[in-house]
Image (tube, rainbow, N blue to C red; front, side, top):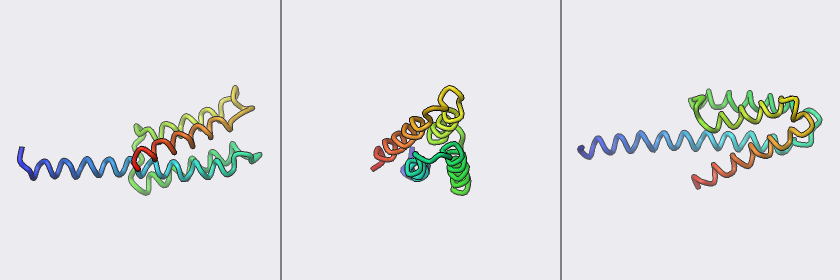
Length: 109
């Protein structure tokens, strides 16, 4: 394999990694907003709103691949918040989302 092909492949893979990192940065940004409002009486509504804004930002930035972990963790958080068994403590799902986002972002730094 020649050097030009290796460089193209390396550049492509670096671009994918940068997009993945950007997705986790967006996840951290919106999960921090949720954490700032965790004691709100309208946490269910805020979670829905932040999820919508998060997915919209992903779409704008071309990062809206549903197979990515940063989307799956948000889907899990939203499903947990809306699960009737967890109605008494939706805060734990938000905290786990924020913790996961922090850990994933710290891997890249």
